[in-house]
Length: 419
Image: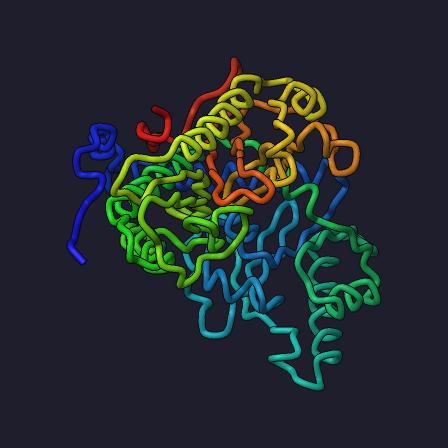
């Protein structure tokens, strides 16, 4: 097949050259970023009456200290590396042979070898390993806090390890709420990390869009984004969300070896854990060419575009989650069954608090809270008819400011689909 670039004449690609980012950490004061984040965690620990936290989710460890190691591996092998933090001390228990990774990081007071308390590591002796792990943690926490029965927050432990902590005499509570509340508000310096990750991801999406042509598989096209992210020292892509043609509707069909056909819609949700560990989360839908989009394809695109921009337009600091749901865009009946499960969500080092639900879903799934300055939110849309052939996924990432909303994701929309 001839190597044709259906996008060669597009004028809206010109701005992508300006999305490149400066080297040398983008002039970010990473010491200030790490210090702010650790202080946020300690403030929320105090607010919720937690004396110590044991964090084993690698994203939370990175948030609280700035250290990373085998992020995806650590997610499913907990506890294999973990962080014990009180108001005055942060001890990183690092994976075997990796203690050097925490050396010299100002947010880590001490690095110790971890005791991997999992069945994979201990086999039939896992229960004994968990009890020994919990005893070590309990002794250390009592020494650091001076409390006989300290309140200890945990978030990602296997059941045996959590039970062993309680049996060791600790008052075990869930650390999710204080940690999520800490992560929800970004500092101005932290926002530089968010923007750096977005700019790098936009470069990758630009390369992906330029590579679009019928005859590629979804996986081949999706790999273009991966290559660019890794080249720019991003971490990984959290989901497999690129689909073409009939596989765009309903949404959440994972990327496959499906061959992209002519004149099909191609929908992408980036979900990139990129530069400095920050999430770049925006969605775009493209057209494979060679002909112009069909009227139905343009209609789907324009409706999704309207939903995203309406909901961005109503966001403001001080707004309650319930008020947002009540004022959000009304999804037409023919698209309602395949609506995206959220109207918007928080975004930081991954998708995070808060979840903002559609008006119709709020009674069953929603919870109230307040939209605050410093929150970064992703405003979502998926538009596809129940039984329809194709769908459109669009999403924008924004910052809530003292006065309104600042757009963060700058990747252009498709002029041919908006025409």
